[in-house]
Length: 194
Image (cartoon, rainbow, N blue to C red):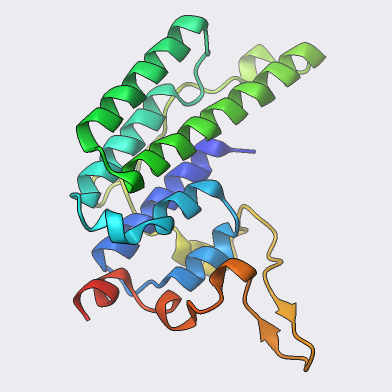
């Protein structure tokens, strides 16, 4: 899986969600990213997100991920990653911030595990290895709204399998979203400021 593209697109979409630059509720984000742990970390503690400058936190988290994504994960690099996470947690001391950075750590670990599996199989071509980091686009400090592109027919990262049917044939939301029907269709700025 292309974790770098996933993180980039998710941070872009969350930037739009938090800042209300375009109307975007949680429902479209959940449809696209489904059970992605990073999305769950970003939307899981919104009550804590408003207690910190969330744009600064997201930029710092994104920069952390960009710094290490796609690189070689030696023991020294892992030690630096752990130190950076400890410094981040000390700086912000917020459960929402901690959830995001730990979700990014999980993605780095998954990327490393997949790379090791490919190397052990001997199928990783040296010339196909990516340079660490991203190529960013202009707008909002390198962030843009990617969800609108997926609505226009671009594939999402996960297959859509969110709808379930109740005993009377009605469509039910996923278990973890019951009772959120009113909230998930509203932009973040409306949730906070009414």
